[in-house]
Length: 203
Image (cartoon, rainbow, N blue to C red; front, side, top):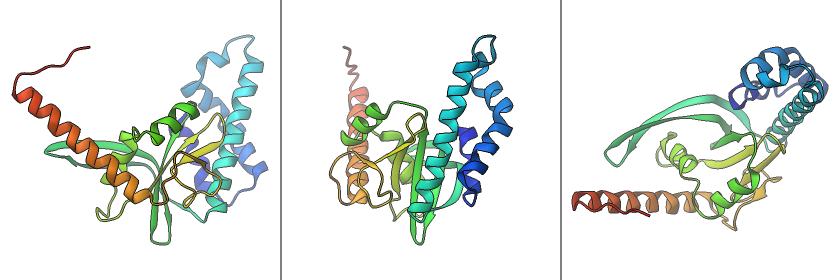
């Protein structure tokens, strides 16, 4: 669903009714790709509830971008680089631009509590890695999770999205991301050294 729902963001000039109409027009394709079981006989109430959540999420996301001055720079942007000596690659759901600021938003269907805890504990490793891979290398973009089921966005602070559910008390997202990334590098080096010595930890 994440890849499909990115599309309404490209129509940020539309009002809520127009976005709802767009979802209705795309419903058949959307359900075939992401919710085929909802097409079964007797699932019409569930199907309607699902599409209602999609409409609300699309409008919430467009509203967040408008209210905070962001424009869409890329959707599903391929990222490549290195973590240490290891080639890595990934795909950022949503990359935003606001003047000289950038933001990466990872779209998830559910799991708001878990994503908030991950960010609070510095365990949002994939998101931080994507932020590191996004050029320019000397600038850390803002990072956030958008939870489609709830239509809510989770971030470390409110500087990128004033409506965000805050995960921690970091006033500087760049410092937080730098700390998480440095810990990733230290942990990786530690594990490699264990393997070099022939040590394997089992639980």
